[in-house]
Amino acid sequence: MATISKKKNKMLPGQPGFDFEKELEFLRSEIKRYESIFDSARMIVGHELNRPLTSISGYLQLLEAKYAKVSGEKELGYFSKAKKATEDLQDLIEAFVQMLRFDRSSEKGEDLEEIVLFDLVESLKMKYFNYPPGVVNSVDRDLPPLFVRARCLEIVLDNLISNGLKHGGNNGPVVVSAVVQLDRRGISRKRLLIITVRDHGSGISEEEIKEIFDPFYRGSSGKEVNGLGLGLSLVKNVINVMMGDIQIKSDPGSGVTATIAVPIQDENPDPYERIG
Image 1 (spheres, helix red, strand yellow):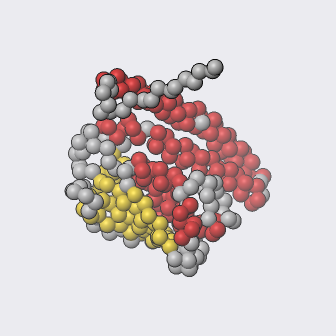
Image 2 (cartoon, rainbow, N blue to C red):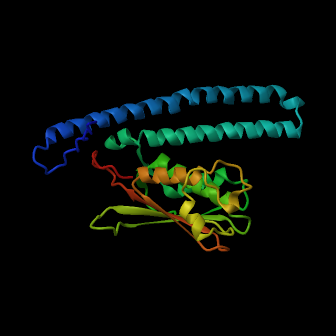
Image 3 (cartoon, rainbow, N blue to C red):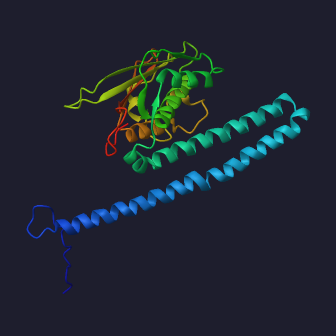
């Protein structure tokens, strides 16, 4: 008769004989293993992918400089689109590197910077100067400087503004506004930076809102828009890194409003605090 082997159940905390020290050592080894994986991913994304992309960008500039005088408007347009595509890829690589390094840098606050939010939005407004109907910077000029993960916040706002311009139609500009308030969740006394990015497009349905953060998802208003559908998925992940939150609200026909809430640090944050 064949014997049936019984799989030994894993012992749980609180059960007789549970070895806390052994379990702790196992968890430490797992953390080290995942740190190694993150380090490898950082190296591959940040260096091995970026290096050939930098070469491509350089060769494109050389080719454009050599053939600009003998190229027509159509050919020059190809150069412009190719350069824009390489710039987008470089931005995407930088965004992924930023996410992959958060576990180390936030422990020492190395990537926390003091920013003036009005100036950050203004720089993004100028970036999309030639994209009608444009961007309106409604951030209060008198808003005090904020101590946040500046590059993360820039990635989030850049993607939200770009998304609003692509899908918002020509009914009105993308409007960016912000306030700072105390975190009312639980007993926290931290401050929250609340930023809204609103467009004037046709809006999206409640069903689409449920899927809008899924990778590669492109809503019905974006079927004819170039892109991979990664923008809002990237935004969601970056905001998670910042320990913040994002909400999307829309009524079909009245545009879309994205609201992000991000914890902000004091001027000299505790090195062990992992927020913002």
